[in-house]
Length: 116
Image 1 (cartoon, rainbow, N blue to C red):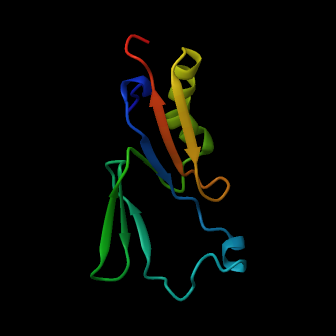
Image 2 (image 1 turned 30 degrees about the horizontal axis):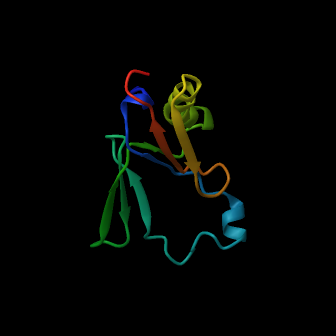
């Protein structure tokens, strides 16, 4: 989906799953006692499924999802670049990235007046 940010007048919500690194284990960010918690990205590129155990799952729908293979450049080009281009055309735009550094959590809010 290569939609211009100016067409969207609501926040764009994205999520990127970064790979688990050794530092996570050292700092106890990953609970070793709960290997049954799993995150799956559906092939539609918009749905995340979190499995808590054999009987519990939650689905989350986003505008874009990026798995562990996604690069920073891919996340930027897909989510942020269209907003930056609209800002340079005179529109308002905000990008809020939340989470650990390089985790890729992004909420983007483009706002472009009609006719821009």
